[in-house]
Image 1: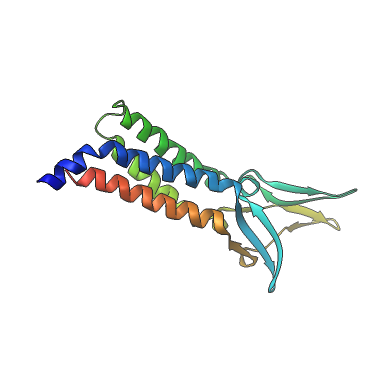
Image 2: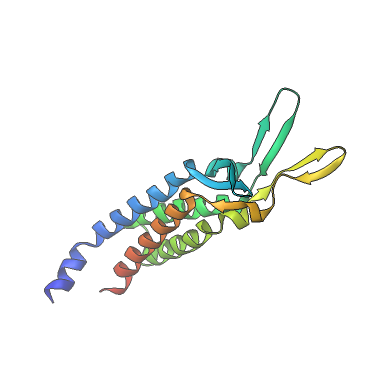
Length: 168
């Protein structure tokens, strides 16, 4: 009985821990998200922001589009932000009784989407000798540290939300 009373007293701390983990996941959009390999050689590494909003490399007379805008990669971080907002409202008693369920759903979906960053990436299309050519093939992409850490943080945050929901 004493253990349950301690858990009930620690509910706001659970919310705070989940918020901190989700904020770390949001920060991961600034670190490398995707790496392109050509054979076994590293060709280029791109941050999460470049993968989400697109990236064009400009030379003196040329432009090369590596990525175009990817809504699904943006949705990943929108879900992390939504989960944080719901948990902060929950900490102040403003989100109602379903706040933790909503945050749990946001974090679970965002964690799964984090691991799908390569599949959600949209290749840039370039004109080469009058023909449209994609910047890369999906087989050449690998997941870098950013989405992996974001996914793990999302899993941990959703686990904390689940403990808070199911332990009464």
